[in-house]
Amino acid sequence: MARNSLVEHLAIAGRAAPSADNSQSWRMVWDGSCLNLQFRATGHADLSPSPSDTATLLAMGGVIENIMQMGARLQLDLQLETHPDDPGRYASITVGKLEQKQDLPRDHPLFSRHTNRFAYAATPLPEDVKSELVSMRDGSANILLFDEADSIRGIANLIKTASGVRFRVRQAHEWLAGSLRFNTSEEVHGSGMDVRSLDLPPGGATLLRITRSWRVMSALNKLGVYRFMAAADSAPVFAAPALVAIRASSDSAGAIEAGRLLTRAWIRLNELNIAVHPYYVITDQLARLREHTLPGELEATVAQIKEECSRRCALSDSDSLYMVLRVGYPKRAAPRSLRVALAEVYLDQSDESAAGQ
Ligand SMILES: Cc1cc2nc3c(=O)[nH]c(=O)nc-3n(C[C@H](O)[C@H](O)[C@H](O)COP(=O)(O)O)c2cc1C
Image (cartoon, rainbow, N blue to C red):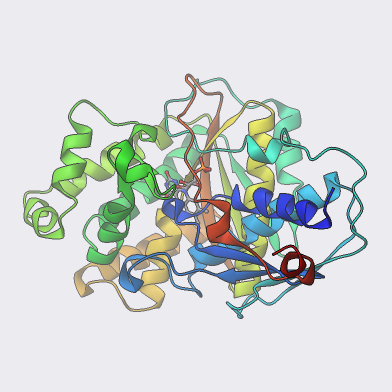
């Protein structure tokens, strides 16, 4: 077995990570001793996350987590260094002696991790699962669990308000609209969100298609359509048996740690047949408030979300909320999202590869 196929297997694991709108804005480059994780531009700069966006760093954390889990399974000696502010190498993973001790595992639970946006049963999570979740950590990142009706309603209300803001912010709306895939020919390149994976009411796909244009959405917003869309978006959160919040320090290192913990907890929950649906909308609007990119008339609403979020998630001054997960036992299986071809996200620049050419 070529040494490179082991590294390629690490990259296949990395590629399975979650990313906002399935944008997969990463690239893994193997130089013969080190696997470097880089930013990869995936579309129009204004319509996709930038290298320093929190959403990008969360996704990078997910790639790192998957690679480290696969490395452990392959019994490889991996040394991880992170450089959260360097899009040329967010992470350098030095791979010790490359020696294959077992078959390449295609059945690792990280390949079964996925988003399920459909309804969940009301069944509560077992106590041992709750204890396991709240004991999980990665650096500054940790988990807060909400499973009482009042606290679930409190977070769901924040999601509903933040979602109402999102549908009135042009960039946020266009990001989502640009990632939607309505048919298989659009899906063929392997990124973006398949509308079949969304739990849409009758006519929902048509409404999404019509409102892809910001001109149409902003006209409809004058009639209050954003309220209807935010209510539909947040309804499953109000009905959730439990919510999981991922908190970590507010710097870029914290975002990567949060991404690792997010992916680790998600893999574990899916392994236990517990479904996961992430909601990034609160974190996203809070970032827009911080960066002054919100329309002025929405700033006060988001400032209120920030205050209420800090209180409900018991955030210290140096911590942030990175993600809320709706979790529970699924009522139905979700269609699985695609990934781009490996050649788009993995580059072998080692001598061994050059020798083989
Ligand atoms: C930073 C980040 C933000 C995300 N935000 C949302 C979200 O707000 N709503 C949602 O339904 N899914 C969200 N997702 C899930 C992605 O859409 C999903 O991971 C991606 O489409 C790949 O699908 P998979 O998780 O089934 O592999 C987010 C994922 C990440 C990493």
